[in-house]
Image 1 (cartoon, one colour):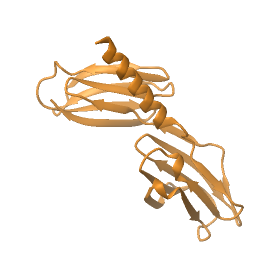
Image 2: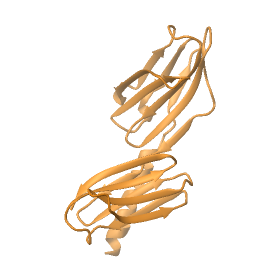
Image 3: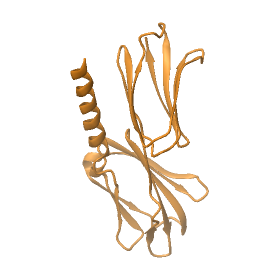
Image 4: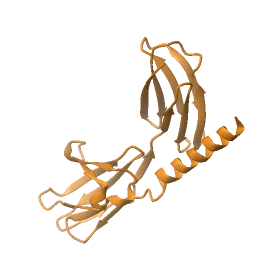
Length: 190
């Protein structure tokens, strides 16, 4: 049993380091109304890109294969103003604000990256690995009739926890992690 726990810890550590290695997206500008996104730094097969104007209206959204490595965005036809680009994959979400002026794009130094929890569901347990960035985190297991079967509240930088589901009656459930204003969930059946 001890060897299994050690192997689980090593596997979780490997998954966490692989998911978060090289996590800073490479967005560069060239002095014009164009920037280049280097997608190879995102450790997933695809990357969702969304751009909103300063009123929060989506003006562009698409999904890209990260094997293409670089994607150019030309904003010659957009009016001057403030915008936000959101990059999203299964491991994290990054938001970067930028300003379009009459002849160039300026990236603002307020990039925010939020990591998503890694939830692994097995027959008799659920493993959670999550970098919560010291946010208050609520962890719940709900049945279809919304009864809470397990609540665990945590404060800290990282959460590595195994939840035993042996005692749950047969049925459909939702495992939920709420932290930093975001809610992540995964459904499972017993």
